[in-house]
Image (cartoon, rainbow, N blue to C red; front, side, top):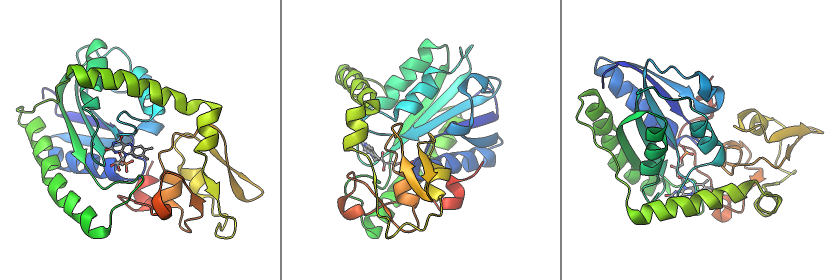
Amino acid sequence: MQNKNVDIYVFSGTGNTLLIAKKISDVLNENSCFSKVHRMEGVNPAEINLNSTIGIGFTVACWNTYPFVRKWIDSLPDGKGAEVFLFNSMGDSSLKMIAHIGKILQKKDYAVIASAEFIMPNNFLLVENDNKKALKLSKTLPKVENFAKSIAENNSSKVKPTIISSLFFILTTFVISLWKTKFSQKIAKFQLDKNKCTKCAICSEICPVENITMNGGYPAFSTKCQFCLRCVSFCPQKAIISRFLYKNKTHTGLPLGDIKWK
Ligand SMILES: Cc1cc2nc3c(=O)[nH]c(=O)nc-3n(C[C@H](O)[C@H](O)[C@H](O)COP(=O)(O)O)c2cc1C
């Protein structure tokens, strides 16, 4: 890493990727770097600081990532050779999608110096019990630490694409592009249990794409949902119900206060 000033841009639906970003930042700072974590949804990609080393982290969704994260990455300016490292978090597998995000950035003249994918607790379908979550974290967090050290010590490695992962990336890019259709938005739309909702409006405040407005005190869901599950997972009353979750069991990787940071 040539530049010790590091800006890490992260999108994290339910806290897992943010936990990783914070850990990377802490380790870099312990190793003579000056690192800061930014919320991707609060930063115009055209305005990122190309004079820093750049970190980009995001959630894996459908072996790809959320469409608005892809849009954010696609909207980055020409990198002019700026160094970038990439990481993601996933429940089980991403089919090496990060290698293909790296290729997109290389085409934009960024120098990808490191990339890694980290298995974290699932926030989707079958959410694990606390013991399984703790086991996953105990295996993954030391790997995150090693990844950050390898960046600071200039001996990092990258996830390499394969022909099969390239084909999957094309396919999953197509699949996530369908999420914005009326059909997808309708069948996957979250439901509200009005008996549980206390009209606290937290869901509306934390939605990364401003898809939730308060209507008559209750949240109303529009058609821009990315299905990141943030509103569902952080609802204090578990009043938002999603088809993506078995028995509406949710996962949060960090407390609500961390997700709301500016
Ligand atoms: C809509 C959706 C799709 C997901 N797709 C995948 C996937 O393809 N592969 C996987 O391993 N995990 C998948 N996950 C699980 C998350 O990637 C994983 O739990 C991640 O650590 C959550 O990170 P976050 O808390 O930062 O959002 C998916 C989660 C959601 C909500």
